[in-house]
Length: 325
Image (tube, rainbow, N blue to C red; front, side, top):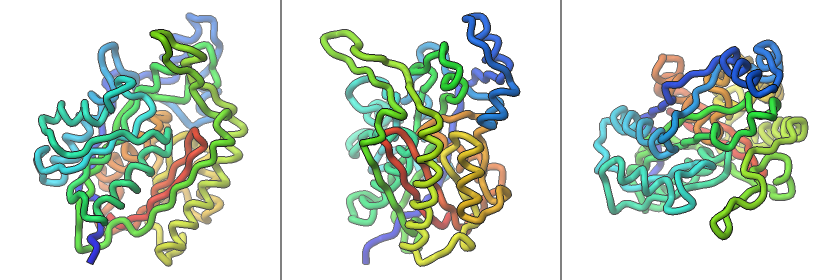
């Protein structure tokens, strides 16, 4: 029989520097950019975010989250036989952030690689890890979302710079005789790439193009709400379940309005939606595992409950994972 995969540990890490809306608004004002706490909260639901200090990278944040997840699973780093890091802000062009993180954990030999699907990255990475465990290629996988989006923001663009934060979240996924991940569903459509992108690259020792984030907020909102409902229903259909079977919805923490709209389409109360966007902002690939770990550690999510994780991001990418914890 093919093994199932099951989450056995979660972890997360936020850099110590916390900026409330008031803190960020003051910084923007010093650069001649106007904003306000009321404007940010009304449009996004965000009240604070965390930014890294100089010298910290995605692998540093990911390592902290990974250690907590490994400890929660009752394992040691050397027990891990697969590492997948979802990130759009790698430490370097290459090698992968996963290999750097692997070394920081003090282990070697197991496969380690990055997945780049922006805010859907953790969903993609979890799907890949699940498939590798089912195939017998791994038994104890470390799946991490880690981002330092503060370094690719344009702080003269108040419509985007207030949205994002830095952080990392991780899970340990183990082979099991008991079903854990019940269904996965991932998609992409490159024709929408221009509505959310960082259109720069390195060539000849210089950055060509624009190295900061660009977003058409209205286009992203419209597309996100539709595909999030579609992928949620697809995963439910694969598992022969309905929205009534979901104990908790854990969406990508991008914008409270998107999350509210998705919940309405799935006929779910916001009381069953895990929300951390108010305190963390949009941490891209880190947002779902961050929210999951937060809810597990504060006792909101309990063992045996059914969770629907879903995300949407630049690419355009989207997907969902239905699982029993």
